[in-house]
Amino acid sequence: MIPCVKHLGTVAATLAVCVTLVTPAAAQQPAADDAWHVTIEPYLMGAAMSGTTGVRGVEAEVDMSASDIFSNLEFGAMGIVAARKGNWGVGTDLVWMNLGATADRPAADLDFNQAAFAFYGLRRLNDAAEATFGMRANGVDGSIAFKDQSVVPAGTTLSQSKWWFDPIVGLRLHSNSPGRFNAAVYGEVGGFGVGSDFTWQIFPVVSVRLAGRTSLDLGYRWLDVNYADGEGAEFTWDMLSQGPVLGFKFQF
Image (cartoon, rainbow, N blue to C red; front, top):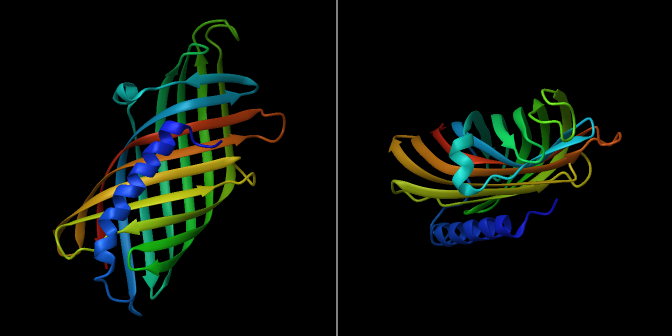
């Protein structure tokens, strides 16, 4: 699924702001050294979702505006670990979200757990940009409890669990100011029909240095996945998960 116009606008605006922030800092940064640098970033996330999901041929639609996000707010956790040496590195991005919402068509309550475990290589492009490439394992486990009998008998609950893998490529832009504040944005695309038909995410962060090599991270994350089971579409997941993030970054 290609992102809708309003999401493309959000992505483009965020990238434009972050490019403006990181460009002046880039010219002042030295070349990468040959020592290992490790970053550990645990986060908490307030997760909401909008889109369509289907179980055993029965679909439920969630259409959540910005004003509805916090009324459907549930929580997730994530952690990013990266190790870099010179121009190369490896990393992992582990995400788990508890997603709950109310579907309008048909009337139903949705309760899903979504996992996204990414493993990737890193390639430094310059002092303000880094490319990523790798694979993400996606898992969805949940249920749809129908409230009326427009599609199935009222009170029916359908559940499903599914795992699949997506190739992903991405770009991270960042500032590296010696001052207290820094900004970064990560964007990626993937799937390409291998697992998901298409998937994308955008993750801007503002970092506030606390003490030494510790920082407080404040940001917002969008993760969109469009997946359909190849065997008769017994399971579909065309969903945008999004929410604010709060985390701590430790650098060694």
